Image 1 (cartoon, rainbow, N blue to C red):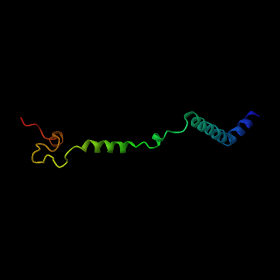
Image 2 (image 1 turned 90 degrees about the vertical axis):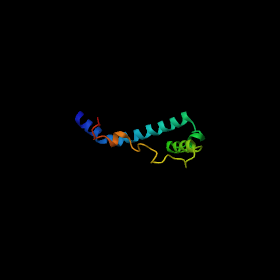
Image 3 (image 1 turned 45 degrees about the horizontal axis):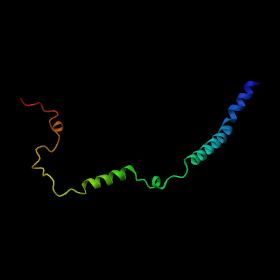
Length: 92
């Protein structure tokens, strides 16, 4: 008799657990909304990380003269030494 009962419970489990899970989720959602209250207006208008980064970069370069750059002729090394001399033996 117990095996028939457990087989019936196993076969009907999805029909029982879905409504229970739905009700628990619904109650939890509304309880959390009630405890937290309405979201503040500043949280809705908060900028994304990429937007904040772009604004910070623009503020950093705002005071600089971007036309004055070092020419490649003046630079002694235009690439890191480790990249160019990786496979070359050191000259003694």
